[in-house]
Structure formats: C-alpha cells, structure tokens
Image (cartoon, rainbow, N blue to C red; front, side, top):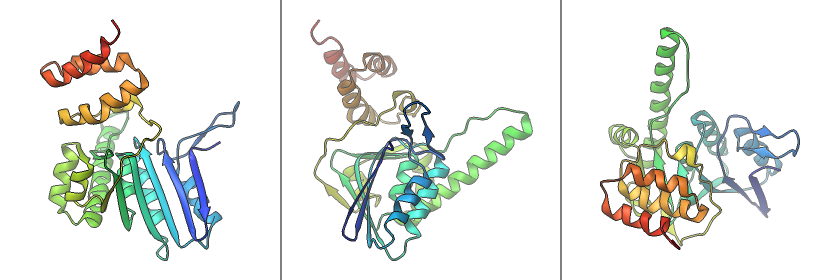
Length: 251
C-alpha cells in the first residue's frame, strides 16, 4: 500500500503527498508496503485520469530527494491544460517546497510552514569525487533558486539568502514573500515528522523550534528528542520553560 492517496471526483484528481519524497519507492518484500513518494507514483496517478481538468495536491512532507522534488514539480507543470492547486496541510519542507511551486493556486493552512534550504549530499571518495559532489550541489542549488524565483517573483539574490539561511516561513510570511497565495483554516493532520532528519536542520530561529518541533514531539511523546532540544537551546528561557513544563509533567 502506498502513502500516495488518490481521489477522483469528476474532472478533479486529488493526490496526497504525505511522507518522504524519494527517487524510487521502497517495497517491503514481506508486507508489500510501499515507503516513500516518488515521481513515478505521481506520474502513474495522473496517467490514470487523463481527462482530469484540475489537479489538487495536498502536502505534508519533510522533503527528501531534491531531484525527486524537481521531477514531481516538472510532472505537475507539464500538464499545461490542467489547473494545479496545492494545499499545504502541515509541512512543506526542503524538496516538498519545490513541489509547492507547481501550484497555480497555493493554499497554506494557518498553522502550516514552508522551509527552504541548501541541498545536501552524502559522498565518499577521493578529492576529485568530492569536488564533483560540491559542483553538483552548487548546480542543484541554482536549479532550486531559479524555480523559487520564477514562481514567487523574488530576486535570485533574495532567494539565495533565504536558502543559505535555512528559512522557515509561517503562513503569514509565506503570503508576504509570495510562496503561497492564500491562508486556509488550521488543520489537524497525521504527523510526518522524522526526528532524525529534522534534527539535522540548522534551526536559525527559536520560532521554528517553538512552533514546529515542540508541538510535534509532544504529540509523539518523544521525550529523548525533547531533551535533545532542551540541551541545544540552553540560552533561551522561554523555550526551556516550555520544554520543562512537559518533560516534568506528572512528576
């Protein structure tokens, strides 16, 4: 079973991208469960409904492969005769934020967030291979920058500054900076948080920890991750009080 849920209503096809964006989905040989959302899954879904006039994509994703995100963006925008509406229900982080840019209409829930940052790569090898990896990262970042700039109308220089700072946009900030076109009522959605991945982000703002990380981890009752955050923000009294209140609850 895939995490890509599909609904068709008349001339409208609705797709849920809830989970990690991957180059190729992984199938568990024992359960036949599919892990990850790939460009192929999205492409196959659209091919099932060639007469659809509108594509609605609901997103709650921590991101994943930049190349897969770009591919899904291209698949959605290639359908010139179809109107694309993006609904950001929770997170649209990293590669998922590139998919968002495919929307003719981009709705963001009032409690949702978008994050853009520099692409990363895991590589090992000799100096020439490492240099090639760095060159690939530079080219990938330029591709991401140009995609954001084309949709939002912001200058490449401003986009680069946001990317390098690992910028988290609240719903209001997303509207102000043209990453979204409308704010919709808050939604309660299934958590897609991968604490191992999200703890690698830079956390440039305390706001990110308070409004994104802590509520998710409290809901998941992930005491270890909350304690890790407590140690990383030991200079911020407000965050520490918020964490201490929950960690010592019932003691």
